[in-house]
Amino acid sequence: LQLLGNTEWAIICYKRSLNKLTDTMNKGYGNLWVAECMITLNKIDHAFWFYMNCYKIWKKVSPIKALTIDKKMRAILELHPTLSPIYELSESEILVNCRVIMSTK
Image 1 (cartoon, rainbow, N blue to C red):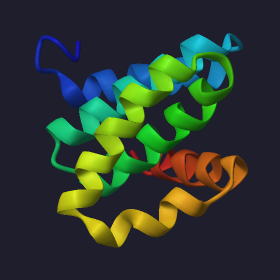
Image 2: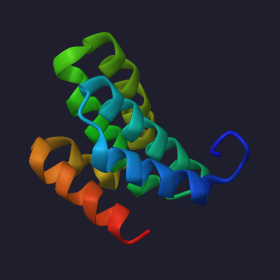
Image 3: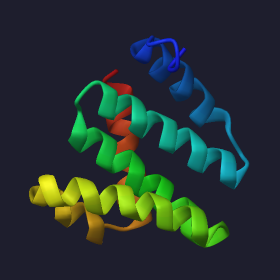
Image 4: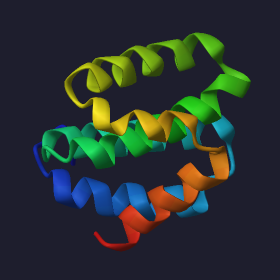
């Protein structure tokens, strides 16, 4: 759906999947795809939360993949430095904010 330009529907599907996923790598991909959808919708602050969640997840299991996400986040921070405090939050704080964002969709 995301690749077909159905971004809103893609987010709904990702939301359903994220709630059921148990595999760590897949959780990271789910957060990455939500972040990309948010970028498409120009919701940069929301995207940053999901990139952060992806980064925190992948940092533990795939440091190389985590680095690619870190580069995306640093590029966003260059344009939106007000988002930098998110960088310092714990994994649980980030997860809570991602859940709040998803519950408002």
